[in-house]
Length: 183
Image (cartoon, rainbow, N blue to C red; front, side, top):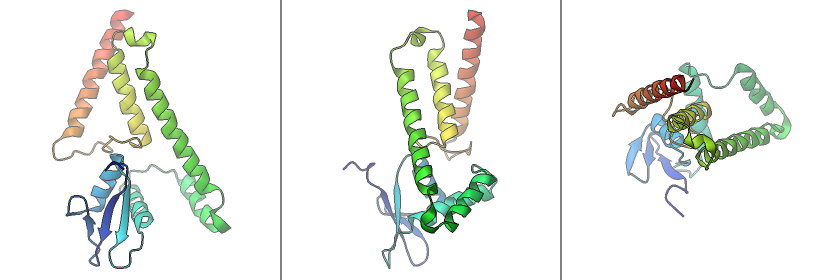
C-alpha cells in the first residue's frame, strides 16, 4: 500500500502532545488539519491505552475553526447534527452526510475530468486560465476535499497562498482581457 493511501499514524502521549510517527516529531492540531486539507487521512491513537481518538480530534479541529469565525456549517445544520444525537442509533444523518460528501467529491472529480477531456472549448483563447480559476473555485468551495487547498488565505511560511492569490488575480485579468477582445 502506498504511503499516502494508509492513514498517517499520530500518537498522543500522556502529556497530550501529538507525535507524527512518519517524521518522528511533535505536531500541533493545526498541523493535523493541514495534513487532512492536503488529502491525507490521519489516525490518532492514545499511546498508553491504544484508544482511537481520531473522531475527538477531528471534532476539535472543526470547533476551533468555527470559534475563530471560519463558519462553514450553518446553524441549522449544527442544530440538525445535535438532534441526530438524540435519535437512538443516530438516525440517518451519518449516512446522509457520508453520501453527500461522496457525491460532492465524485462530482468535483468528474467536472475536472470533463474540463481536461478533449472538447472544443479547449481551443478557445484563455481556456487554461479559466480552467485554473475553476479548479481554484472548486477547491475553495469544497474545502480542499480532494487535496491541495491550504485553507482560508492564511499565509504559510513560504507565502505560497499570497503567491497563489496573485497568480489567480493575474490569470483572471488575462482572461477578462481575452474575453473583451473576443467581443
